[in-house]
Amino acid sequence: MLNLVLFGPPGSGKGTQSEKLIDKYKLVHLSTGDILRGEIAAQTPLGIEAKKKMEKGELVSDEIVIGMISNKLDNNTSAKGFIFDGFPRTTAQAQALDNLLTQKGTSITVMLSLDVEKQELVNRLLNRGKDSGRADDQDLSVIENRIAVYNRETAIVQDYYKAQGKLKDIQGVGSIDEIFDRLCRAIG
Ligand code: AP5
Ligand code: MG
Image (cartoon, rainbow, N blue to C red; front, top):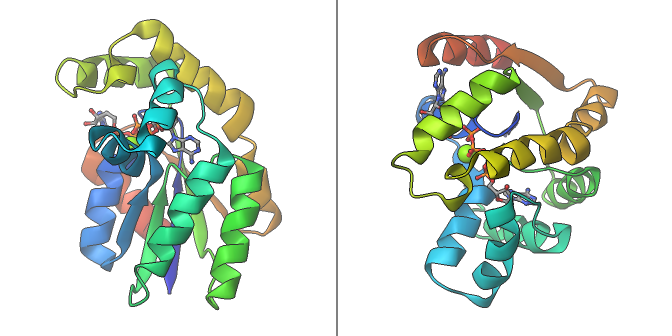
């Protein structure tokens, strides 16, 4: 199996590049942000709980997101592989993911970490906020908090994969096709 962690701060292009990667490698795309927004739209208890955190740009609890990923892995037993987009965001999530994949006789192949500077992230998210309908794109202070939460709580997850020899840094500024080429070369 080819199991990719597509990593990077808010607005670094995880969702954009995931669409191209699933097309080329025929992988199942698991974006915890997209799944959570689906739960909010369906007004499930989980969605109502998560909405409070997401509106502020804070992380949803490990327990909730790990449970969601576990269900998705169970429901996609014939997948050729997965792209994990926006997950794991804490070391506890990374450990849980390793355990879940080990139980299924597989593992993460590589973490691809998109590197984009803060001002470019802010510009992209404010621009998307004009028509995304995402509450967390509407307000500069929420965008800045998402980036701060990434730096404070999530960036360290790279060390977890680095220790396993699985971290690849990708320059995340340039055209969408250029960045896609860099990702494909890193996957090999
Ligand atoms: P999530 O949905 O994961 O959002 P995010 O990490 O804040 O990132 P985005 O989806 O905004 O950005 P992206 O990297 O996908 O970039 P995109 O391709 O869209 O999480 C949302 C919230 O859910 C979190 O804050 C948290 O509350 C919760 N959550 C989710 N997962 C969680 C977890 N595991 N644990 C706990 N809580 C969790 O691109 C952005 C924009 O830039 C687009 O408009 C795009 O068109 C544009 N763009 C893309 N590439 C380029 C380029 N090369 N040049 C110029 N513009 C570009
Ligand atoms: Mg995204």
